[in-house]
Image (cartoon, rainbow, N blue to C red; front, side):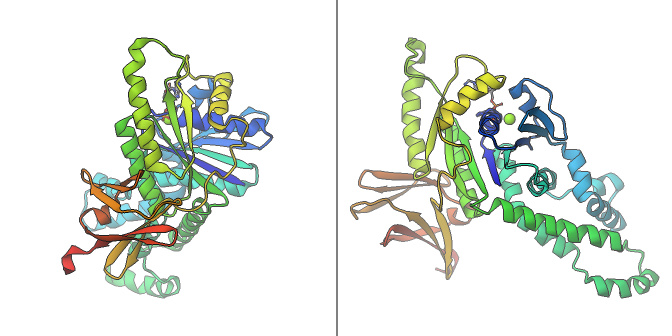
Length: 392
Ligand SMILES: Nc1ncnc2c1ncn2[C@@H]1O[C@H](COP(=O)(O)OP(=O)(O)O)[C@@H](O)[C@H]1O
Ligand SMILES: [Mg+2]
């Protein structure tokens, strides 16, 4: 069983790469399903066919599914949401506002991601390929399983047994809507499902995330940020797919400037994501639609390699707490232990330079406001200390 998730900024080629990956997996003999959780569905366009909100068979071993957010939302959160809406309304919130407020942030996307657990559990598939919503929303929801559990436990801190005894009594003193048994059942199974989903997507033997980007400044920047949070949330990332490189044999001078810039940005991609492997995909001469075009893309990404391969294990960056400080830990290749140069760029940017080895890192929110209190080598990694300025 293998789950491969694709994320990246809108328009970079997530759907195309997801479709190509799934097609290749199916052709290799794996029973494969590709699901899109992006509300802007285009999986069907990619395969040049219609794909429904339930698994739709596309080829002997290939299925596609464009998830219907509203339906998934009803299915997983319906009861919880109804109760919250009733509770908010009881506190004096107006009906529609109460309804809206009862949708917790990230809930919608999370509901669609929960479909992954169901597909994985079903035993019908060897590979589940997920075409995710663009980065910002996705990261929030990836962190969400734990957050959601936290919310739920805060909102519903009721002991079931105590509740059974207290309910009749409370009814005589308050008209507050009380959670009924079936709601508590629903919450219990929701928490279980969320934990299960978290277990699946954070298991590096099952799931890996692949970052899709283009050699363009803003896109790389956003992918850096995504990478930082993926590492922070313990979601294993195993490859970067750099899509839409203008091929060398394009000689039209119109593209000279673009080509020069793409070379420069390829270097930045390297410095931002190594030691992850980076797969380059050329800009295709024609629109990528239909199985044949997708097969070309798969060839460009994976060559002869099986897409289910786990291309990288471990973490390319890690943040750990040390007393009041945080340590940013970077594994290092074999290097002369020369002077470490640290440079804070704009806002969240940190550039680490040791000789001609260089890394661009997007700092997580919790480190941005902190002072760097030094860096040192520890065996095979570099440790950068971020001091809590409040206690200074
Ligand atoms: N390597 C490529 N060469 C040419 N066109 C591409 C390539 N990759 C993607 N496209 C096209 O770019 C558009 C956006 O790609 P898509 O996969 O839908 O991006 P996303 O899902 O990230 O929004 C589509 O029309 C797709 O056919
Ligand atoms: Mg898409």
